[in-house]
Image (cartoon, rainbow, N blue to C red; front, top):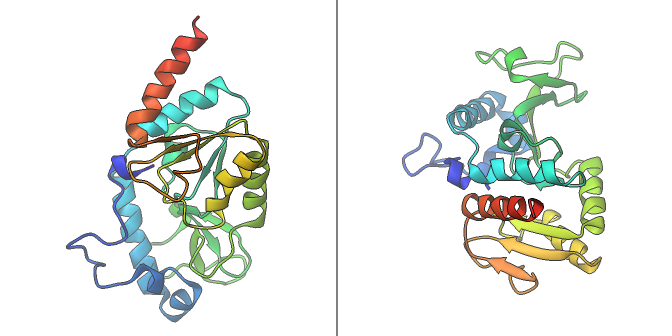
Length: 223
């Protein structure tokens, strides 16, 4: 979803972090072993994300939300671009890189409350403060995945947008929707395991297709 915004991958071709494996940094053991290194990596990622903007696909979904009161976004992205674009009902399966929390008591902290020059500690309990994202080996937040499953099961139309459809448990959501009668549409430039299951599989990027969808919805609504 955010590729057209220029959100970079974990490691650029000549990037500072090219020698690191993300799985070796984005886990609890790595954080406890070397919290300074992990914080430096996340601050680097945040700086990159701050320099990009939502794309036309993000803004199109804001328009769709205004048309349908039961509309919701379930995202695996952690870049906060849906909220920046203006979407209100966003379920973040993997957290949000722009938020933080205490590793001990889960007290939330915004970035502007964090001293970036040292390893932050929780004033409440003294625990280390970590990025509020789901790391490798961690379970997704139970309440968020439950809501996502309930919304999927109740959906009349389900769009799978810009995902490889291989990462669980998110990959099961379109099948849950289809099994309960939803019309399933895949929007992805490349084929995925979902392509043969969806009623429609559209081979373009979200930034191209979703604005077209909004234009057509607007035309239908004006009839």
